[in-house]
Image (cartoon, rainbow, N blue to C red; front, side):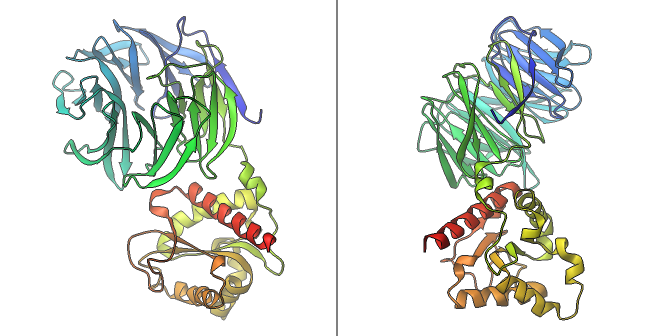
Length: 457
């Protein structure tokens, strides 16, 4: 087993755990078993609070950074808890059993019920929610994300429809009906990709919020009750009904490993990633325990397949060409590449500042791109051709195309603006919907493909 198990949490429940979730700051884990809720201090592997107040099963829970916990039950009841004291602060009923709940901000909660109604309420107006009929079936999943400075909510339901809501107006801005049975979803906090799943063995991955297909994963399960995606968009864990879980690498779309867990019934959530990390909480081999794993230091098989050495007569495996406005994204990509391939094999200007402090830098750069780099990765956007240094670099790129060496060039698109010399017939990776880690994975894959093509000649 290559995956490091950090600890095991047990002793909090006497019934089977149905639900697992982290607090917003990642310091606490929330678990539910029938009517009972446990709040865990993961660093000490002990329970902070055991909460009882629902008259029926607790189906969802969400904890904000102010240590306020909201739980949704089939009573129907929505209860707001103060975690330090374990006291109930607020409680309200409903006309239909609740099925999901999430925090919009520190003062506002959104919930869904089995009648397909979304309700938003503030702490000050807990008993006066704003209701919206959202679906023609039971709402099965809710998640709040910030996308392009806009606060959005995504909902799924048994009507096989996903909807995206503008939380400022509580109006739908997009609806999507998958071409397969999809009743639930998982979305990384960066909001770049959404993974949909339902009553079969497949996972469908789409860009968000455009819902353009990105890929499909075929699991070894008859159906998939629960999945989770890490905030880095690197890892996906699918929990199956056959007492095991699959860990997928979303950079290579390959199955990385399996871990033992327990079988889990449908409409349960037995797995969750810690916010801003790659720690994983999953219901353990005992139905009344939770195992914590750390995926942060894993090296994928794909990364190991890419040799650290570069091609004969060339100095760099990858050279990055970009405008200054894209530096933040490119730096994150460069750092991810250097972790697996080493800085010496990556031409990113910040790694070679002393070398580039010279006269006639224009011709020096053209030689680095044209003759000393295996793969030229060009981050194209509306400001690329207006940058003086990008114009210098692009001359080397255009010459490679003229010489029939277009296979050494990889375009990464950063916006919708036209770029001179790049046409609709040219392929690209769309950086608008991918994390830097995912972009780095695409670069490694492209490098691997080109090396394999050359070895086959």
